[in-house]
Image 1 (cartoon, each protein chain N blue to C red):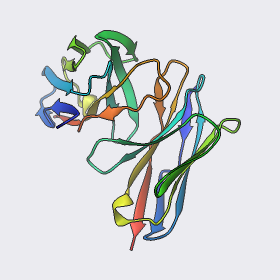
Image 2 (spheres, rainbow over the protein chains, first blue to last red):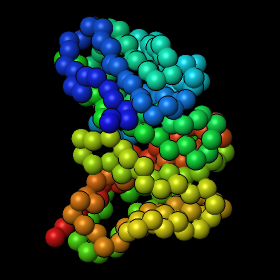
Image 3 (cartoon, chains in turn blue, red):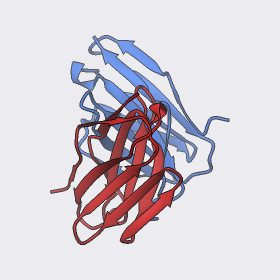
Image 4 (cartoon, rainbow over the protein chains, first blue to last red):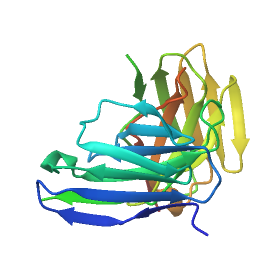
Length: 115
Length: 109
């Protein structure tokens, strides 16, 4: 029973292409997140959705567009991929947004390599 | 600005004790989290502190001092499987987690 799942696990593509990463959680959580982890291992929040509504949109190029069709899914679409987009992208979910004890459950990550 | 500092790497011996320190500066504070991340895997939750003091959970304990903006993770009876990165994260007033770069812990036999 996978709690937070992402597909694909690995994604290798050429510069300029458009790609999507899918994320699903079966925990019944209200809040979902996308993080980028670069080669220096910093986890940077990109987006957060609460009940399908965008609540965090960090300084991310508008080539990145999240879509939440329902509260269990948060997909990430990336247009015109660039070399600097190569990283591991993690999806995560948590029970509620405005709750201090807000343990986040992470998906397995998608390693994106742009050539 | 918001900032989390923790050592880049630490080495310890199997069976020993290690303490990983973290200092934080965030806009507001709603708690301090520690996560463990094995190489090539996702982070997994270890502990949460919002009040000053020590929280113990088996071989792992986490300490918080809000006045000093300081936390540590204490790992006892180290096992080889504890080799991983340990991420410190502070939750700010917007309930957003601000992450450190992680401390890579190497356990030697």
